[in-house]
Image 1 (cartoon, rainbow, N blue to C red):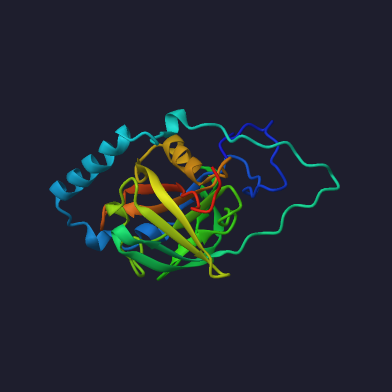
Image 2: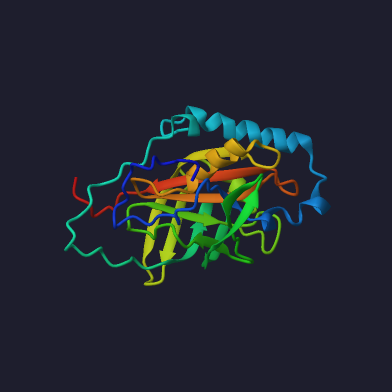
Length: 244
């Protein structure tokens, strides 16, 4: 994926990775903008207000940006005779009470397409549900859990994701009935339509495996225009039963 991470990095058997295809870019599916043409009448004042509000989060302690995005730290490979741990139960539902989001989650895959002469990964987007990128982690596996959703089409399940703010609770329910709690720590607004390819590749890094557990939520923005990607990141909330 655009030579990131470096080819010398050796992935752990415990880490889910993308297929090794040269110069890959992770982008959301074209379907995310399929309905935008008929919804382009949006008040510029609302757009500016939301952009300013998201930009104000830059002062939060947990804030990071792509420019200082840390490299993925790969753990040492286990001995050849060691077996990888069994996969954790998949996510089936997401709730963000502060935004009113409460929707089921289904697994989604990707297509390989050509953009600007380069082969890239184009993620599919679920209809009337949030979609869990099927090569990303599940809760409890210690890596990046990537979930996408439409904001103005086919259910609008992430319509109110733009209302998320640092500290908001994100609850993922898995197929075994367990709830996993996370707290929003970072919000990014990234130009997508009309942006140079290298910027779109940088946006794709948010969807890569990480050296820590996190939830990465992605949708289009603003409503009816969809030329940006809104990315909300949440990290685990320590269990009350965890010893200090």
